Structure formats: C-alpha cells, structure tokens
Image (cartoon, rainbow, N blue to C red; front, side, top):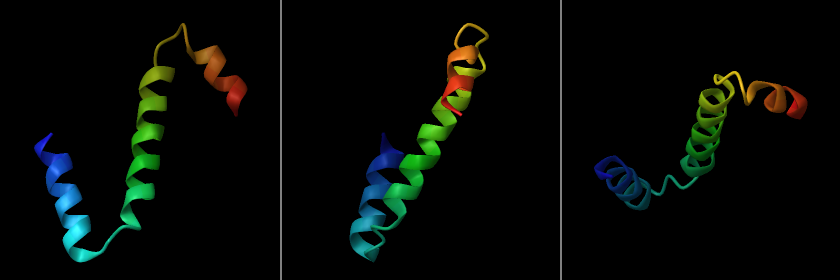
Length: 49
C-alpha cells in the first residue's frame, strides 16, 4: 500500500494526473493476463477479443 500512497503523492505534487488512466489500464490488462492463464477461464477470455 505504500507504493499507492507514494504514487498518489507524486501525481498530486507534480500534477501528473494523466498517468492514472495509463496505470489503471496496465493493471487491468495484467489482471486479465493472470486470469486467462488459468485453463478454465481461458475460453471465456478469448470470446472477448
């Protein structure tokens, strides 16, 4: 959780709010990769793309 606090402070102090959508998108894609690596869920992920 310290990373999230530091990241928020960095964005607030340096006015880098444009980084938030990029980081959230990367985290969602990473989560999607982790979920799709399980063989049970993989066929459902393939139908999305």
